[in-house]
Length: 211
Image (cartoon, rainbow, N blue to C red; front, side, top):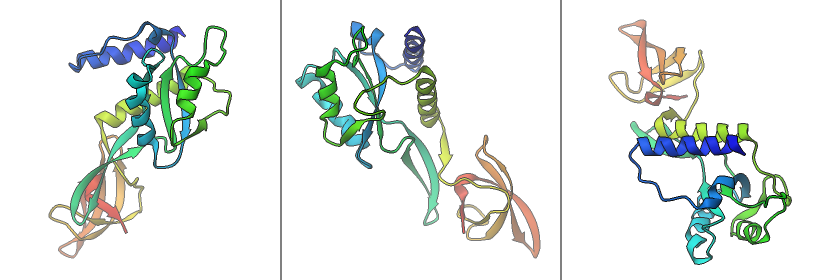
């Protein structure tokens, strides 16, 4: 439990650094655990919004603390324009930080029904007997969320030899071939025809699309 609390404390510290004013945490927050809910495809955000909206009305704020749908920002070229959208990292899943189990690891029915009976929820990811996520799973999920917030990634992954069309810049609409990729920088080298000869052009991922 202390490891999970360390993770939560790290998130709180990061938020404070970013200048986000935090809402005081309920004492139960320290013993809460992360659980994965399986939702209908495409209804992840509706499930999250429903859970958060009903917290106050159903007086569940003492046992349900966070509800997240991890996403990442992706970029692509559409009609010769750069378009940024959000993509869900775990389609079909909603993650909840809650006091679902008591000290004897018995399910708290009040919390179980609140989560399970939410429209759009199919069940818990591990069946009707919910199990808290492992520390490594929580760490991976939160790390991906942080990366998704801080960094825009290309919607399409490229590899050497891919045939592409340039969608932005002086070489717009020209066909080319990927010669090298630099995923950590979001860039790639593309061979295009220029003045009757092949030339390497340094482009950002979002500036090209596969053909």
